[in-house]
Amino acid sequence: MTENSLKAGLAARRRLQGFWLSLCSPAVSEIAAQSGADWVLLDMEHAPNDLSMMADQLRAARSGGAEPVVRPPFSEQVMTKRLLDIGARSLMFPMIQNSDMAAEAVSWTRYPPHGVRGHSGTMRANDYGRRKGYLQTYARDLCVIVQVETQEAIDNIPEIAATEGVDGIFIGPGDLASSMGRVGEVAASEVQAEIRRATEAAHAAGKAVGILGYGEDAARRYQEAGIEFVAIGGDAWLLVRAMDDLLQKVRQDA
Image (cartoon, rainbow, N blue to C red; front, top):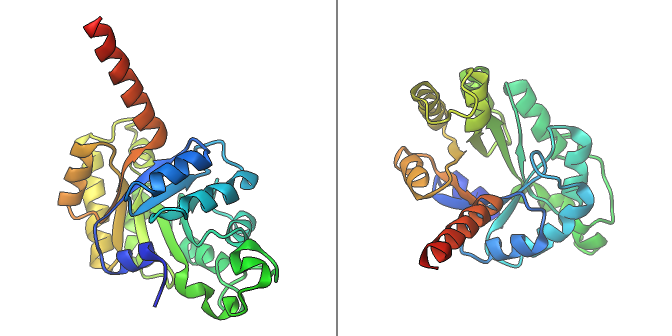
């Protein structure tokens, strides 16, 4: 049985709310992880995180009950290996277009003969060599989530979802809209129709679906549409809204 609550939740198709973190701060990761959220996303693709900053954010996130998910800058083998070595066990791979790309991503997370992950005997992931059973147990706690962000990827969801080792499908609504010529127009009817098509295809293949749905209205709407794991807000997004709202109210009172 896995000790990764996110992996277990995806397999059971439970509703799982999370926060998207891009401020590159261990303190923010700690606060978010202690909020009661099911998962937090530590972003390296659209945030100025580098590898040397991630271990402290992983440590901070593990202080709470939320499972930390790392999204690398792009989907490639070397960064995946290094993230796994410093203790990441849940990864979200961006811009996966087909089953070959999904299978390749999974292979980066597994040691031979099941994959191509390079081996190190002393690393944070195995408690610096103290966890003697790591090689026999590590795979049960790995959670691999792949992002579908174009209509081509949505067409290929049945094959992507059937790839052994893929635990969940995450829809990237912003890039999906851009790929359809509707940059910044996630709410457009044709974009929402593609999100529904992606959700139905993933569910038909037996996989949980995730998406960014910031704010109460969007989060509720996506959950009611059957999407299981929703990023209900981001750290920078929440900070901007709270600061602007407070300042406006105080100035009005004055």
